Structure formats: structure tokens, C-alpha cells
Image: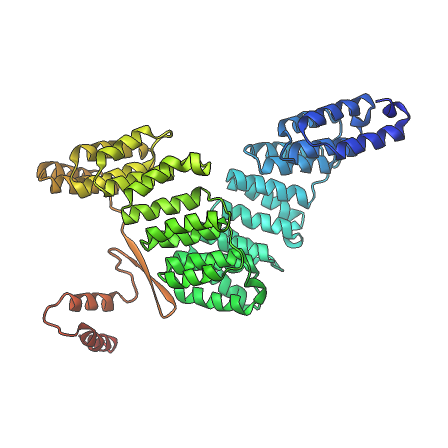
Length: 518
């Protein structure tokens, strides 16, 4: 303190040094007091250091940053942008819009720059506010930033992707004169998140067609699209591309995406080969491999992977890895191992079981016919059981004809789906089938009549298959498929007992259909 009293320059240097070395909020408040004592808090540059630490540091306090802001007579653009940046990624993104409005009210005293619009757009993404985002988009266009600034362009694509307005996201993307890796990747990832993996793959193909060499993140996202589609042929092509790009060979994200893609496309052996050849693995890589073993019913190998990653590679499993092992136990009927893992998750791995872990073990118990134990586990769950848990119990009741528990599960499911009616169809259909299996025909007819009276429609099933590099999608009851006539002809032949070789017969029938004969 004595040193701080020796002239303004000495005090300034000391205060700046204290601000740079600040490590926690207790220190910052003491430094703030020193700033006030020497009048340094009136300097925007000096006070911005305290605001930046409070707003952006992991050990900061965003509400304290706002209190400091309220004491500043004329905040500058940097100070506004600091708070915009902090609140845009916080749990209170609406406050970012509030500070943006305050900024606009200053008129020409504070100028909005490219960072301002970038952070405000991210706040709209975080809050899923498409209308407010469109208004910001208009400001961006008026200021010419939509054509000039790459960060703002990326934020605009993120806005429409985050709000699931993919048509607008594509329009913004197409208007960008010089696209970068981030923009390509944001668009592809958006299509995948919105359930349009085929569009994501098409974007990747467009990228290659114009000669834009994708980076490792774009390649990994394209592989994720292949995984969602079951597009093994395309996945293999991307794998070959990765092999030719030597710099990608050691990338852990691409390796993990390849393991996941091959495992989910049915090529478990290739997935294991890619996994074992990876020079570096992280917890996501192990989760992908364990998930692959789980999907293919190799529970013991999944459990061995869990032990191996801990003992040989000293990698601590996370909740996703343990969920993969529990799923493997469920598919293989390893009830003892699954229950033991759930019981020891906290003590052995330091991970509190989440809803999905309980759901998996409930499913495991139901498959083993232990419906009462499954119901007891549901009642002991530390969180409110969601639809996946009650759905697992209902499926178990259908298999083992337990009407009483089925009625309970349906009651709970309908309470959960009171606001969202999308799951009602399957619930009522399952209950009707359970009544029929239990020889309670009157109850089954009553449920079917109620389904008809309420206009409830069963969501049609959907499946996909890749043939000659093209992914074909089939929906139950689809009458618009381009090959519907040929498909129906083949199904008729396959169900016919009189045809010795339906494929030979089908070829003849197919050619006759192509030429317009009956």
C-alpha cells in the first residue's frame, strides 16, 4: 500500500501488475478496492481487466462483472463485448440481448463491431431465438458484415442450424463468397443433428467436387453421417481419402469416427482393426469400440475393453463408456455383471449413475423376466423415471404377459406424454397386444376402439439399406417409392411356394415390367 501512494504512474503499474496476477474472486475484490482507492477504476482500460476476469475466467463471477459494469459512466465497445461474450454462452443468454440493447441506445458513442454481432448471434443460438436472430441478421447485412467477416458468417450459419431452420442455414452458407472449414463443418453437423444425414453427406461431396480439401473435422463429421445412414460404401471411400492424407492418419477423432462407422455398419472386424492400429486413443475411442462390441452382442469383450483401458492405458472411463458396457450386458443377458456395475459406478469409478444407466439395467431385468425387481429399481431411482424406463418395463410386460405392471407402465407413460402426444400410439398398441396375449379380448377391443375414436395413428416403421453405394429408405405403407412395383413383385414371389428360384423368376418379371408388359 505504501508503494501505491508514491505518484500516479507507480500506482498504475502496481495495479496493472496485481490485475495480471489475479487468480480468484477474493483477490479480485481486493484489487478492485485498491483501484477505487487510487481512482484507477475510472479508467476504462484498467477496469476492463477486472471485468474480463470476472466475466470470462473459470474462477470468475459473472454477476460481479455486471455490478462493475453498472458503475462505469461510459463503457466502451470492448467492455460491452466482454459481457456479451460471457452471457452469450451462459445459462442466461437473454442478458446478452439486454446489453446489446443498452449498447444500441448509446448512439454513436459506442460502435458495434464484428465481435458484437458474433456474440449476440451466439446468444440467439443458445436461446434458440430465431426471430431475434433474424433481426440481428438484418443488422449484419446492413453493416456489410455478412459478406466481409468470416466469424459473423459462421455465427449466422450456427444460428439457423441451432434453431433447426436448415433451409435458411443453407441459404446463408451459399451466399458466403469464400467458405472455410468451420462453415462447411457447421452445416454438415447441423444436417446430422436435424436428422438429414444424407444432406450432410451431399455437402461433403460438394466440398470435394469444387476442390475444397476437407480438414480432419469435416472428414470425421462426414463419417458420422455415414454412420447414421449405414452408408458403408461412402464410409470406405472416406477411409481411403484419409489414408491418402497422411496427416490425418494419427488423428484420434477420425480414428474414433471410423471405429464407430464400421461397427455400426456391421463390419466389427474392420472396426477392431482400425481401433488397434490407432496410435493414440482417448475415452471417446474406447466408448466407440465398447459400443461396437455391445451392438454385436460381445459383452465379454466389452467388459475386457473396460478393464484394458484402465489397467493398460490408465484411462478413466466416463458415463458413456459405462453405459456401453451396461448395454452389452443387457444384450447378452449378463444380469449379475450389469447390476454389479450399476451398484459400483460411484464407489469404483466416481460416476453417479444417470437416468440412462438405470434405464439400461431396468431393460436387463425385464429381459430376464424379473419384472418385480425392475419395478423396485424404478421406485428407488434418485431421479424421476422418464419414458425410456417405463417403456422398457412395458416391453418386458409384453414378453412375459404381466398385465398389472403393464397397466401401471402405460399410466406412467401417458402422464409423461401428456403434453407431447407423439408416443401415445405405441403405448396403446402395446397394451392392446398384451391384453390379447392374456386372453382379455374385450379389453383389447376397447383399446383398439379408443385408438380409432381418438384418431391416433401408429408411427410407420422405417429402415434403410445401401445398394451399390446408394442408400435406400423404406417406410411402412409407402406407396411413393420409385421401385414400388418391382418391390411388390419380388415380395409376391418370395411368399409364393410354387416358385423354385424366386430371384430368377423376379429378373424375368422385372424385365417384362420394364418393357410395359403385364
